[in-house]
Length: 316
Image 1 (tube, helix red, strand yellow):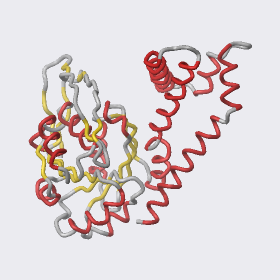
Image 2 (cartoon, helix red, strand yellow; image 1 turned 30 degrees about the horizontal axis):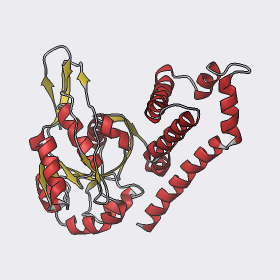
Image 3 (tube, helix red, strand yellow; image 1 turned 180 degrees about the horizontal axis):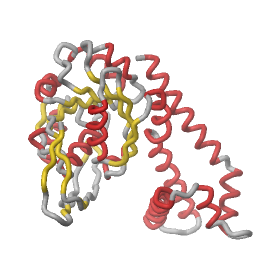
Image 4 (cartoon, helix red, strand yellow; image 1 turned 180 degrees about the vertical axis):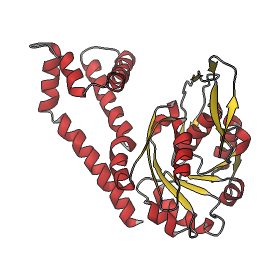
């Protein structure tokens, strides 16, 4: 269920924060991320459901921060479980959410259960929680490659399941998220999922048959772009630019180009042609990229990651 909550007219700016994130595989990754959100609407929705995260990694942290920052929820209505005591302490300290090391505490507390764990862990965790998860819950899985049927088959009959594929730019509120409803999930469940993930970016509902392809494109896509930014920066260093300047120029160029595609609605080829003068520097660079097989390499990367996602589903 959703209720409207009034706010004063005008802009409300969330306090900017710098915070730490604990990465995967017990490795500490310290990240400084600047978040400044502007909410301009007089009215916005606040969900009544309590949210529980099974797994307290970066996705859980990013979603928790955005749900709290946007006013969709508050820290007291979010519970996160993680096996690492230090991770629990950091999450509680830096976001204000409740934490636990017991997954069953989350199931007892929450109406919406978000499984934010690695795919190989899903089977064991679902089997452990099978008798605790009931039809009152909405189960959201963001485990790559794990199909809805796998989750449904390990839970009691009639439990509502939604498969979601976000990506890591959710950490800065720019995620590309796709989701598909399971056989028992309702349109209202879909609206709730859309509302939750709109707090960290753009959301698309689609048939589940497309989600492995989404995983190969936008799920893994940020890594492809990081590799391109690194290569672009390396090119700048090779022609004499300082590393810090080269990396900033490369990242800003990718950001600006992406916004041009999204905001103009023009085909990328049109935008490319608009900055490619006959006999100029840009066409020389593009020619070199084509000779190096950039286009084919990117296409092959998406296909390879998609096939891997499908394989994970077959093994589950």
